[in-house]
Amino acid sequence: MKKNLTGVLIILSLLGFSLTVQAASLENIGTFDFPTSGSPEAQKHFLLGVGYLHSFGWKQARVEFQKAQEIEPDFAMAYWGEVFSYNHPLRRPETAPDAPMRVLEKLGATSAERLGKAPTEREKGFLRAAEAYAFDEGGVSGKRTAWMNAMKKHYEAFPDDREVAAFYAVSMISGATAAGDQRNRTNYLAGSIALELFRENENHPGAAHYIIHAFDDPEHAPISLAAALKYATIAPAVAHARHMPTHIFIQHGMWREVADYNINAFQAGEDLWQPGDSPGDQNHSSDWGEYGHLQLGDYAYAREWIAKAEKVLALNPDSRRSMSTVRNMKARYVVETQQWQKREVTSATNAGELLAIGMSAINLGDTVLTEQVVAKLGEMAQANPDNSNLNIIYREVSGLALSRQGKAQQAETLFDEAIALTDAQRPPNGAANPFKPAHELYGEVMLAQGNAKKARELFSESLLRMPNRPRSVLGLARSYAQLGMTEDARAQYQKLTHIWVNKDLSGYEEAISYLSDSGK
Image (tube, rainbow, N blue to C red; front, side, top):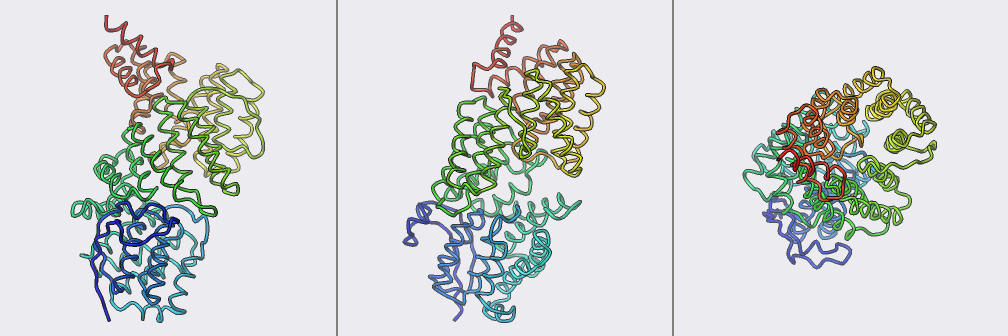
């Protein structure tokens, strides 16, 4: 018998969770309506699963969908939900690439058998979209595109259904990664749907979440700020939901929020993790948390982040992402703090590490190591011409080395190429990558050569791309000071004193000295 239930998803004490689900039963993860034909008991778990799914809480969602299946083995929507609890829709799958197919085969051996267990056209449409995703043979991009196209048909058939709209939006955000020239258009269309949902229900986890993903670039980030601030309160039970607002906080240069929210996100991921789980949420939040504290000038806490990441790696020694996170965090620390360190270059040294080693070698006057890094980067860049970040780093290190040798024209040619490569990329949408932004480094070189006018242009562009980056703020202040533009210089130095919390940094002392002297 068909039983329709409206789900108002508030996790209080609906179910007796085991400790493996941690404290999620005490937390709120959003409010939305998603009626299905499931039995009341199965529907409770289904709604919990959907709430987690909207916030990319994969493990938590999977537990709930599987519980719904145990209660009602032919509940088709519980299998639909489990399909999308595997393999992040915005990243390449780390594990279990065939899991979605196996989930649907549990429900039925053929599409006809599976669809026969979905009693309404609405549920059949969701199930067809899951089949399109699970059984497409075009690799990751093909699966994402197939899911998006299937959800488009479903949305056209049910344009007033809010959950159809929400999952159409996230399918477009996923499909946009393979949309080429249509990427931005696809993202913004998804964002427009999510905005409409958000206006109707500010507590909808998917609406707030998908707005952030859709408008995660410097130009459109202001559209997402209200959703980011709200999302931070909607789903504290999910590590990704605690982290996600920082995508927009970074775009606004809100460094304290970037740091603090990732502390919370890391803790949520750590609380949920068990041996054998992916540590992805911990890796992501530690990388971004370190970035936030580095921008604040809180280098001591940045070192604590590295220690946290090393602990994650120790518990997950086979995780390549955990290893990469630790290595990149250490390299970023060197670049951002300018605490130069000499290190050996090996065949395994990655581009970010080579940037840190190369900048260290140049600033410490080690010409042999500098040449070694430049040669290594040159080989890597030649072998990977489509890797724009790698090719930017090669030009950054080579250009900086040439500028220190007095070969200004050759250096500027390389920096101009780095800028062109940077401008050809999608706008920045997270922690700086490469770790040293090309506009910022070029500006520092121009400032050192006495070309304050060119430096001012470069630092201004850097700050348009990444607001409130303190190294660019400092560079712009110095540029204005060299140009005799005292009031503009004072404004930037004042801004720097509001960003950096560490008053012992030389740039901070410089700012205080300039503000004192110029105010007399």
